Length: 437
Ligand code: HSE
Image (cartoon, rainbow, N blue to C red):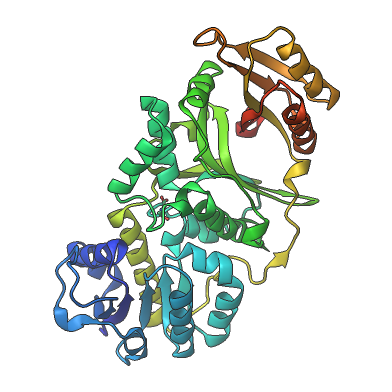
């Protein structure tokens, strides 16, 4: 039986993992596929670099196009990352009638609108299981397992680096910077860790999930995004006090008025399943009409889990090649996407955790709560800790009842402008307990 030829673009962490999974699991793969998946050429930036795996040097080239153009290649596996070079490579592959497997969430979130239709009209597949939640097969689940259901909303931990940082800060009481350095050393972080900690990587993944779950195209720039870099040990201590855990969530709801789409650290009840997603693990919690709540969990980053997802895509596309079909599964889960507005965060109704650093003087707490009250923000709990020393500011934490975010922002602006009250130093949304019922 004809072997399936693959051209690999990129031999970094994930590319090396792909070589390793293909070699280590060769017997199982052949038993499932009936033939072998053979990497016939690999495009790399430099021929001289040390590699994480041994490969035949004759496979290596710095010429990406020469790999894509080879006649003995059925599938181009794009693991270059970034946008411009990766996009050019994918478009060239489609033009040359090669199927594409990629792990590039930024590329698909920002240019999917061009790439998916190009692949569909070119009669080739684009598979991208590793683009969201690494090794956890959420894309296959959403496209196939839940194809008969209607998804109302979902909540996810889709950035392993952020989850590792927040889980470790909660466990150790250490500062953000110390913990991020550890995440980088463990190989979870993107080449540019700003993508992870700013929430941008999660926003790319959220845009892809919204497309798959709701059949809706959203512009990544319309998604409300907050990073995790402003969290402090004090926030974790307080979260624990109110029975919560701080997690880096993506949240999406399909509402009659539009799509709610947001990425931000969130205080969630400690007894919700997402609170138990430790370290760099990822999870997606989905509410759908017929199934109800379901959750998908596992390793969302790292060489071998991500490579496993890429190789599973190679196998799936290889099956399509052998069957002489493409596009039997709509690439975006829906045959056509509907464009719907993303709701403005100012209209969000949520509970809030507010941490202030204020002077320890009579009347300060009263003025703070009066301003909140004037804007219709109802207070559920106030905690003030003793100042470390006389004359030092005190930490005041206010937990609100459900409030409208726009009203809260106006109240915080008024507090900021009021002499002697100091700035609100932290605002964290609190997930209502009803959301995980
Ligand atoms: N940097 C990403 C993460 C890797 O931390 O989840 C997978 O996209």
